[in-house]
Each structure stands twice: as C-alpha cells, then as structure tokens.
Image (cartoon, rainbow over all chains, first blue to last red; front, side):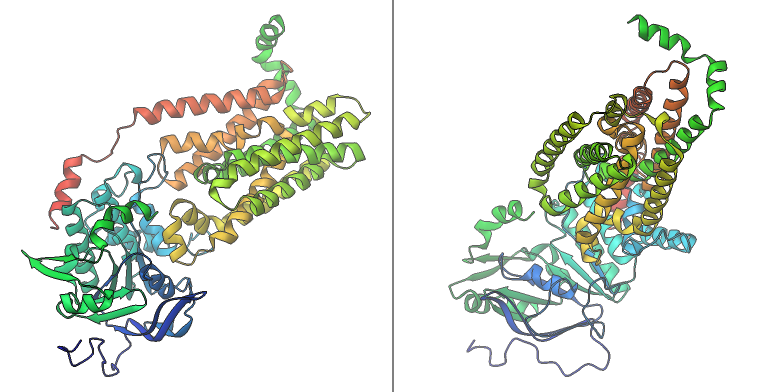
Length: 283
Length: 299
C-alpha cells in the first residue's frame, strides 16, 4: 500500500442523480463469520463493474443482498434510489448457463416473457399485445429472433445465454446482475455473450454488476473491479486493483500479476488450480 | 377371454349407448368426468414439469385411505377422499421439501396409507362393490351430492390456478431467475401440491386411486411431446384428458366394462401417438446455419 498513498476505495462526491446501486457501510455476516464489512460502493448508470474473488468470498451473497433475498447485517443498500427489496422490477438477473432437458416445454419467447411479467399473479390476459411486442423487440435486439420458437433444450449454451440476456433486459432494468453467466461457455461464446451484455447495458444506461472468477473474457469491457477476499476488498479500475501489490495485500501472500498479450495472468492465489474444481462444484 | 370379446362386440352398439346416455345417472357421471378432465388437464403439464408423478400416486393412495375411512364410518366418500388427499399433500409438502428426500418420503407415506386403507376396508362389514370401486373407480355410482362437491372443488382449483399460473410456471421452468425476481417458490410448492391433492381426490371417484395418473400425468406428458409452448401444452392436455375421461365413460356404457379400463387405454394411446409425433419432429425448427449467422453478426 505504501506506493499508493490514496486508498483505492473511491471516495466519490455524492452524485447529483441517483446511483444505480448504492451501498453504505454495508456488512454481511453469517453467524460468526464476516463475509465483508464497511463496503461503500456506488455504481453509476451504464457502468460495468466486475466482482471478483475466490469461492466463499461473498460475491453471490452480494447479489442476493441487491435482489432483496438477503438482509445486510449492517449498513444500507439502495437500488436506483430505493431500498433493496424482493421482486424488484428495476433489476435484471442473468444466471449461469445450465443444461436444460430436451423435454422442457418452453421456448425462448416464453422465457423472455416470464422475465417481463412471470412474477405477477393472474393470467395476464390484458396487455397481451403490448407484451408480445416488447418480447419480440427484445429478442430482435439480442439477435435471437431466429430461434425464439425453438424448444430451449435444443439450443446451444451460447444461444441460451443470449436469450437470458433478453430475459434480463426485457423489463428495462436500471441494474443488470450477472452471476457467472459465462461459466460453461466456450471462449468464442464467452466473448460474444459478454459483448452483448455490455453493449445492451450501455445502450439502455443500465449498470452491470458482473460476478466472475475469471476477468479475462470481460477485461476490455470492465470500468471498475470489486475484488473480495476473506472479508477484505478493493474497488478500482482494473489497473488499480489487478496488480501484484494490491492482490498480494488482499490475499496476504505473494501474488504475481502479469499482462500477457492483453490477458491478465494471476499466479499465487490458488485460484487457477481451483478453477476446474469450482466449475463443477457450483451447482 | 370370451367375456372380453363379447364386451368389445357391444362397444359399438350405438343404440344401447344412446339409450344409456338418456339416464340421469349417466349424465351426472359425464358431468363429473368433464369437470375432472378440465382440472387434471390444466394441472398435468405442471405436474410433469415439476416431476410430481410419484407424488400424485402417493396422494391418490392417501385419498383412497380417506375414502375407505369415510366408507367405514358412513360419511361421504368424496369428502373422505378429499380429506385424505389434503393430509397427503401437507405431509409431502412438510417432509419432502428437499429434492433428494422426496422420493423416499413419498414411498414411505404411500405404502403406509395403502396398508391402513386395506385394514379399514377389511373392518367394513358392508358389501364389497363399493370397496373395489375405490381402487379402480366407479363413476356411475356418483350421486348428485358428489357431483356438486366435485364441480365446486374443480371450480376452486381452476380459480386458484388462474391466479397462480404465471409465477408457478416461472418457478417450475426457471427456478433461479424466478427466485431472483421474488417469486415465493417456497409458498407456491405446498399450495400447488394442495391443488394437486384436491384434483387427485376428485380423480379417485372417477378412475379410482390406482389409475388416477392416467388423467393427472399422462395427458400432460403427451402434450409436452408435441409442443414446447406452455399455453398450447395446457390446451392440448385438457383436450386429451377430456377425450380420455368422457370417451372412456361413453365407450364403457354398452359393454359394461369398468370405466377406468377405457379411460386408461385411451389416455395411453394418445400418449403413444404423441410420442410418435414428437420423435418425428425435426430436432430444430430453424436451420442451424441461420441461427449461427445471426450470432456471428454480433461478434
């Protein structure tokens, strides 16, 4: 830290407009274990924030807090100016790609439609024409119209994630929460899907909070990084956070970060050996 | 064997069938079957999607136990079946919350319920016809009080489903995102299992406890073989369930064969045909090249 006199945690002047996401002195603890504490974070509309850290560091728990599914132990959390709550229509959510059964009676257009109003009670018979138009527009925007009527189980992982992007965007959210959406996709689909998320979010001025264990596929898109390790965290631009010194301090051990041909190689976090284990362990 | 050939010979005796259709008890049976077909057709695709076939079977066995108890104490069989199914739905909902435990919980409850039911029937000094009908169904024994109970229960289930359908579908096909959007899956699951319990209890009347899956599961499974649209699947499932329930009764009239035999055969034939159509469908309705070029345009 001595080489960086200013703390890497951004101390911003209070913005004139509402941040898409605002955490103040936020802490989360399970029983005796503190996941993180004193977290101050403002994510602006249109900003792309990558959330990194080893397993168990509370990345997914942070998303659950923003979704209103988990209460903070301390501090406050606001989404687009209002306290986080369950069933928040200001939030779009993109999960990991999972294998779907061939027999699932669901098509892309149904999936996107559920993203729009699936949480509402009743049949939704009124406003069906408007709903249909909105779904078609969104499918068109992510260029998934060609396979919108194909059973989901028959689509490739990349196609499914493209539909997931549409499902998350269809309600015109202020915040897009992505929980490892690239996991189990091949490299070219990782790039396409992350480009699509970034482009769509920028166009609709939505903030993106992107949980990932691997920054390289999204590195060119990332504005800032939130790196969580064992209750400690750093927030800053990729260059500010993803360097040997900062990560060594976060992990409390020697970590080397090298840039190799536009990719970041991080050595010494135990992370890279664990990657394959993580991928199979997570659901 | 001769008995069967003789009966099948009378199956297409239109005159006898038309004659029987004039009787009020037959009309009541048809009304009951129509209500049951509608309810089970609506529920079946979600039962299949949520992998609840075995739960339906378990619930049916407890509906049988309830009906046997009602028969013994002289109460309404319909009310007894309903009470048994509700208890079953609550037990399965309480004990079988965890996925990996659900199967074994159902197995344990089902066998116990069936055993108690057999004991209750044995204790019953009455004639045996009624007892047998609880297992394989005897719709022509449905009286007008039963029909009132049946149709009003069916109406309650349908109204509840109209209210719950969208979040229930969401939570069934896409649990992660549904949870993120605030759909209360932990509340919906026991409520749906209660609705399935009520519908199952109605089914015990018509096709009997052993064959209730022919209406609660098979039409949904068949429909989902031929369409991937949830709405179309539900409509087809209702049509299939109605054809099986009403068709089964009409065909069984002249030959005097138990209704459940025809209901299950029709239901199964529809299922086989749908499987055939489903496997003949192209794996994808779009040419893969079209989809791929669409994807490439983005990168």
